Amino acid sequence: MDFENIYIEEENQIGTITIDRPQKLNALNKRTIEELHVAFKELDDDAQIKVIIITGSGEKAFVAGADISEFADFSVSEAKRLSAEGQERLFDLVENLSTPVIAAINGFALGGGLELAMACHFRVASTNAKMGLPEVSLGVIPGYGGTQRLPQLIGKGRAMELIMTAGMIDGGTAVEYGLVNHVVSPEELLPLCVKIAGRISNNSSVAIKHAIKAVNAGFKYDVDGYAAEIEAFGTCFGTDDFKEGTSAFLEKRKADFPGS
Ligand code: COA
Image (cartoon, rainbow, N blue to C red; front, side, top):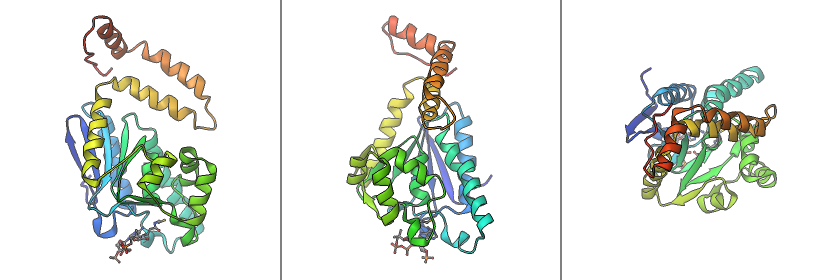
């Protein structure tokens, strides 16, 4: 697939996806969601890529939401399909990806933009970031997982207030709430994400894959997270990465994980 609305850069085992519709503040239209689906799958399938960073182009926006012009005249059934397909093709895909995904929030992350950031495994924001779920100001509610992931991340009361007021919070408040892990200047945003990605890359990608699965299991209503952890813990013992990691420790050397 030829990408029109995103581009990918690969360096030092890190794949960076940039959403590139700055004239529309990187709003997520159908095509962009499909391109992101393909890009995430491609990078996840690439054994050389250890971490994925997603950000927005320009200085103003990460993503200013789903593209309002595309769904303004949708019917009830079309709207349900939009939400279900988007969740399946992109948001759930990102959350359950084997490769760690970091959101580098470089400006407005509103509606579907914040929902995309929340589907990532964790978030770093720049000081000019503004985050919120403004959907009720449009007469609708978040439809890409926002009503579920925001309370998971910041607690029910704060999520209710943010959703009901359609308000925006800055990086400082987002750190205080636990919505983002760090807030840094715009110039420091990608370098910090790359630095964290580098630290992640030193570890076993196989073990990280199982850790993501076990952590996510605790947030699924039909899965026992503790049972999922026991299963994943045991599975690690059958991997070459585990043999290498434990041997390297006992031999007092740095592990060189085979990734299997
Ligand atoms: N969907 C479609 N287009 C969008 C968009 C969205 N979610 N967000 C921004 N854009 C477009 C604007 O329509 C405008 O396009 P135009 O130049 O062709 O008119 C362009 O991006 C620039 O946005 P603009 O509103 O002029 O910038 P601003 O600095 O005045 O305001 C925001 C910035 C983010 C406050 C404002 O764009 C906004 O409120 N966007 C919608 C946010 C939202 O409700 N998202 C949730 C959607 S469910």
